[in-house]
Each structure stands twice: as structure tokens, then as C-alpha cells.
Amino acid sequence: MSTTEAQDTTKSETTPVGEDSAVKSRKDRPTGSTHFGDADWDEERPDEIGDATWGEVAKACCVHDAKEWGKIFVGACAALFFLYFFLVSLELMGSAAKVLGGCKAGGLMSDDTNPVAGLVIGELATALIQSSSTTTSIIVSLVGAEAISVNTGIYLVMGANIGTSVTNTIVSMGQMGDGAQLERAFAGATVHDIFNLLSVAILFPLEIISHYLYHLTKAMLPDNVKDGEAWSGPIKKIVSPLSDKILKSNKDVIKDIATGKVDSCDAYYPALCLDGIEDYKHCASKCDKDAGEEVGVDCGRVGLITCDKTTGCPAFFQNGANLHDDSISGGVCLVLSLFLLIVCLMGLVNVLQRGLAGMSTRIIYKATNVNGLIGIVIGAAITILVQSSSITTSVLTPFVGLGVIQLEQMLPLTLGANIGTTITGLLAAMVSDNVDALQVALCHLFFNLSGIVIWYPIPIMRRVPLRGARALGRATRRSRLLPPIYIIVVFFVIPLLLLGLSS
Image (cartoon, rainbow, N blue to C red; front, top):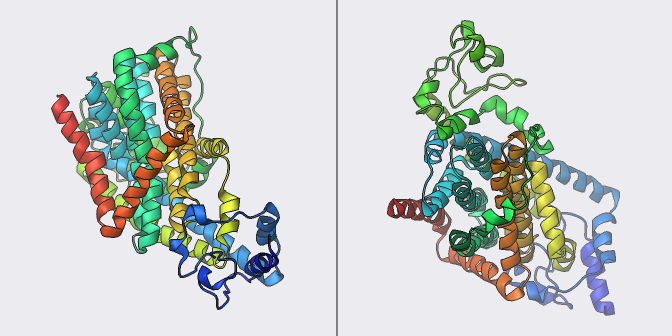
């Protein structure tokens, strides 16, 4: 490093947090380095970013005076505050989506279907309830109950893989106020979509022709599977207590409709609490039919909105509510969650922008530029902890929008999230004692691993989803209405057309 560059680097990294020098462009710096917040920040391409040393990264991160540490502490607390309520809004949005779309999603998955219909139904069901973890768990349960075949379950989980990326695409719209941020955020969100669509484009016809996933996983199955217990991630334990006080969806309704235990959601209404007392014991505890217990006498009844053993009944639960009442509650909570999500996203982005102001792009790029395989491991680990690939990619999307995480780093993180989300299905299979349920969960895992092997290791193949995502990101410059139109067309219009044609 030259003396001039070293002086420039030292100056930029010792500038107090929140302060900035008169220099606002890389054109005015001897080294031509770009700093976060520069007027021409968006003009720098990834291949133009210089390399920094880990010593420079450590200095920028850890060498500060007392005043700077105070600002960093306040900024970190603010970031954690907005991040927590951002996660709460995602959890609430998922619950609201399950209340609004649960009956339809359960009905979609209730029958054995042809491969194309299975693929589309898996995608639509996941897009409706905003959770591939829930969809795959239901699919595994359906196979375990012999309601659908293993082959149909394979096509359903392929569709669920596509539908899961709708959430972070919605999150990317929270940065519509800034064209450059929207371009990067939308590219960061859709790289997940494109990868999943490309994987399905190759592996779906391959599975129809050869049934390779079926035969591969069949050879790996044990003679039997012992019953196990479901596992809940630590992040869910932190976020759920607050979101469950507002709205808690009843996943059993979706499963019961899908397995044919009930014909429709009407069987769960009106909601009934014993003696008019609204708590878990009087409203949501289940009847023991073998002991001759009856609804309304020995136990209550809940619909799409249920109560929790720990937090009790949520604010939007109503004793005596009908399906229409619960649907209205779900709609209100969906609007509320979207509002909270946008507010928290704006707050989080603002805090991060202030914290990174004046930081050299070389330092940021060095700190976030991890090896692809390590990125996949990190993405998988985070997803296993939060039990949701949607949460993982949705939290990372604003960082891509800010330019903190490059698109090349976002791709392996989302691939890791794809692997991590398969753990939910494996855990659901462990709860079942049916080996077919385990086979579908393993098919989900190997489907994602196969997609990674095809599209990631070879650079020329890796560039396909990256270029596609960048093209979609650039298209938002021409019209900021592209993201909502894209969501409607890709996740709903095209699947519905395919479903109609396949029928």
C-alpha cells in the first residue's frame, strides 16, 4: 500500500461515527476509494472495490474513543430494537397469512395430483401461508398419514421451495423510497427466486423421467423411524411470546383439511370457550374422544385463531367468532404487520446508514466477503436457529439494499437457507413413525443439494442466477411498480394458469 493510500485509509477509518469530511466523492480522494454515504456511492462496481487487510478491518471495527463507543452502543441498541420488531412483524404476517389462506391451502393439498398440479399447489400453498416450513411439515404429515403418495409429496416440496421466496421479495419493496437501494434489494431477493426456479426447471422433468430423488432416498431409508419431539428454534422462542399475544394461527386446521379429517373450516366454528372464559384450558384444549368427551361440555373449540398454553388467548381471539370474523381479524393483522414491517425496515436501514457513514467500501467488502462454502454454512446455521428460510433471507435483503452485502455473497447465504429449511421437514418426519414421511423430507434436502451442485460450483453456471437477478434489479429503475407486479404474476397468475392447464 502506498503512503498516500495509507493516509487516506487511516483518515477514513478514524473519522468519528456520524461525522464526515468535506470530501464526498471518490473522485476527490487521491486513492479513488469510495466511502459509505458518498454522492457517487452507487456508481462503484464490485470489481472496482479495492482489497483491504484484516488489520484495517479490525482497526475500523474496534479502535474508537469513548464518544464513538457511546454512539456505537446507542446505534447497536436501536438496530436490535428495530430488528426484533422486524422479526415480530414477519411472524405476525405469517400468522395472518395462515388465518387468511389456511382453509384454501389445506384444500389444495388434500388430493393426490399430477406432477405439474403438485408443483403448482406446493407453490401456491406456501405463497398463501408465507411459510415453506409449515407447508413441508404438512406435506410430510400427509405422506405419513398415507393421504398422498411419496411421489406427489416430492412435487409438492419442489413447489414449496419456489413459494418460500415471496416473503423476502415483499420485504425488498420496503426500500422503494430510494431507487438505488430498491435495485440492489430487489436483486438480492430475486436471486433466491431465480435459483429456485432454475433448479425446478432442471430437476422437475428429471424427476418425472427418472424418479432419481425417489430411488436415491429410498435406498437411504431405515427399517423404521422412532417417534421424536418437535424442536423450536431460539429466535422463535424470543419472538413468538409477543406475536402470539396479538394473533396465533391454528395450524391443525390446515392439516385436518389436507388429511380429510374435516371437509371444510366450517367444522371449527363457531369458536367456543367453556363458561365464557377465554384461556387455553377453556377454549383450545382438545377433547379425548376415547373417553367420551364432547365439545361444549368437556372442552372448547377454536377455529383458525387459537390460544397458547403460555401466553393465553391473543387479542384478536373472540369467543363465539365465526369464519368471517376470524378472516377479518387475519386481514387486519396482515395490514398491521405490513405497516410494522415497513416502519421497522426504514428504522433499521436508517440506523445502519448512520453507523456505516464514512466507512470505506474496501473495509465493508473485506468484512462481508466470505468464501462461498462458508456462506452456505452460515445461511444454513442461521435458518436452523430461526426455523425459517423466509426470516433469514428477509433479514439479509435490507443489507443487500444498503450495499453492505454484495449480491455474490447473498447467493450462497440463500442457498444455505434452502438447506436449513429442510431441517424442519426432517424434524416433522422424526415425530412421525412412518418411513415414507422421512423419505419426502430427505427428498427435500437432496433436491436443494442437487440444485446447489448444478448452479453454484461452476462460475459460468453461477453467473446465470446472478445476471438474472441484476437484470430484474435494473428493471426497477424504469418502474418501481415492477416488484408488486412481479410478485402477483410469478407467484400467483402463472401458477394458477399452469394449474388450470394441468387440470
